[in-house]
Length: 339
Image 1: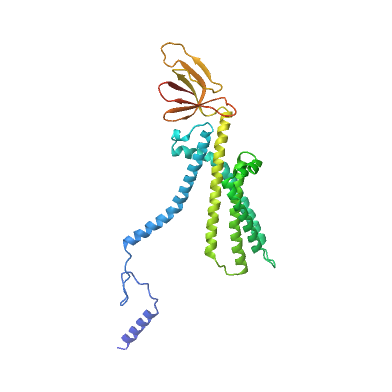
Image 2: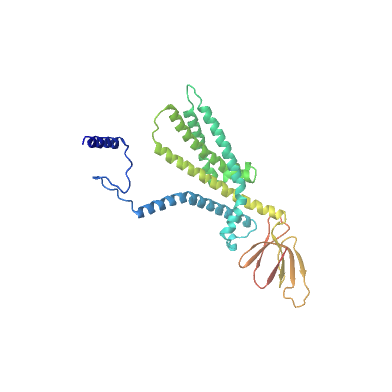
């Protein structure tokens, strides 16, 4: 009789010393309310929201890049054909046509901008290391003020760069070499101003953090940084657009000087004589053997074709302006292409 109570007490003591096992999902404590399962619709909404947030990081930059390529390609193509007096509105070019030529206009300016950005980042890093050296009078605040003043002055120069009053073009831009220096250097100066202003905000925050002073006006500085990033983006966009316009005109001039390599040479057969002043065009009257197209012109290069017109230029450049011959696409002429 005495052994059974002692055995029961030992069993109870072992149970008390045993660590509590985690509650199983199918067992619910008495007096504790059961957790309501999350609705399946809410789980689907969370998964959808997470997917859209991740997709936004990919779609938004992709849309910006495609828009930039389209804008630059359109600017480049318009400048190329305007050099020959061909309106791009008549050509009805597709979006793919503009996107195809955009890398030709973007490669060099982007290469220059990225190289300048690397040099600027290396210079900023060296200056920050020098300012972070222990000294009695830290120079963070002075460097921040100097960068802010320099950046502000260069940003004020943007009004002249973007508006381009007549005296600015005559007295300042005329001092620069024609081509990409005259096109890229003025907007790049404004870009440097925006970068210096952003760097001044960074130096100010680093200096306050080094001194252990609580930083007030964090929201205002964040808004100022966003505005400066917008100015930096606009100046870069303006630089790319200016360069694309200049590059299109320069490429047209180079093609005319070299005889339009890669373009299609054509023979023009006409029912009647064509009055034109292009240089280097050979004319021949064919024998009258019942052929409706009696006159043949050779030496033309086809640079564009619309739904109703042919735009032809000579393989020999005519100085000082290039001449484009516009022929109707009807029954009065026939075009043959040469390999």
